[in-house]
Length: 186
Ligand SMILES: Cc1cn([C@H]2C[C@H](O)[C@@H](COP(=O)(O)OP(=O)(O)O[C@H]3O[C@H](C)C(=O)[C@H](O)[C@H]3O)O2)c(=O)[nH]c1=O
Image 1 (cartoon, rainbow, N blue to C red):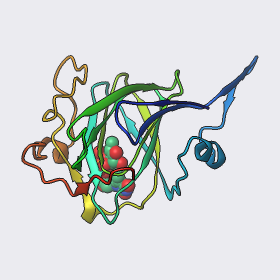
Image 2: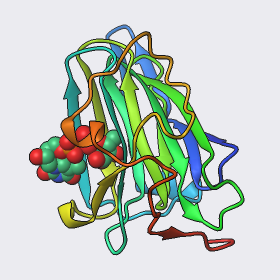
Image 3: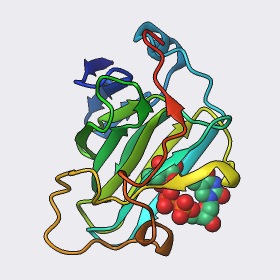
Image 4: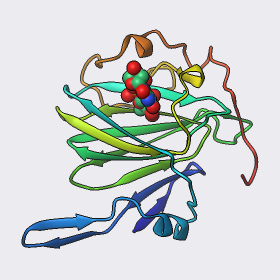
């Protein structure tokens, strides 16, 4: 498995190996020992799977606040997405900075993001499916959103995105009080 550190600590791009043959290919999309070898020794407790019919569907920027903050391992199993994370850890040297990467069914790339980040994606193709593992259960009382267009992210959108009512009504990053704090070396 290839691992690429990013400009943000706690955010890693992973590319598991694909074994191709005349039929197609096989890939271990997640392996605890492989992740531990990459320094990502995590206890995932839930798998999520979302389908978005239209290209330009934007889900985010989301988080779960402590005590149910989540680490996430995200991949695109059909179509393509531009996956984005924003450092929301108060006190972090990169607070408010964002990182994005194209995850597609074709490139097989995955994004790991630790607790304390906002997460969102925009679909780059119709009928795109995203599957991701999280390290805490769904806790609606801790679930929150920040406006997708309040962090200066270049989503590569040609027009207005398809949004949920919740995301359309989210506060801006500047008006939002992050529940996350940065712990040096954590
Ligand atoms: C996240 C979640 C949602 N739900 C239910 C709640 C709603 O009735 C329905 C849709 O939820 P929501 O509109 O929050 O789904 P997304 O907009 O895809 O949100 C997700 O997308 C961004 C990119 C994320 O990183 C988060 O995991 C998550 O916030 O699924 C559950 O039952 N369990 C869950 O873990």
